[in-house]
Amino acid sequence: MVPLIPYMFIPIAREAMVASVVLTLLALLIFGYAKGYFTGSKPFVSAFQTALIGAIASAAAYGLAKAIHP
Image (cartoon, rainbow, N blue to C red; front, top):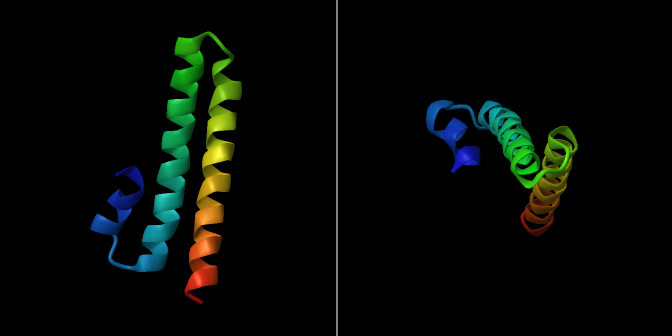
């Protein structure tokens, strides 16, 4: 749901996409930090790993969608 929130409030699709990327990365950093904190690993490393993996997955999905529908 987090990535979709900007599209509900920002009428321009390109601006909503940028806001969605920023908001999603922020959420991934927060969730990754919490994961690291509660599992006993280093929270900042966990936050970075979670955000990086999420960014790679998002980029792959975006690229695949662009390849299918140019």
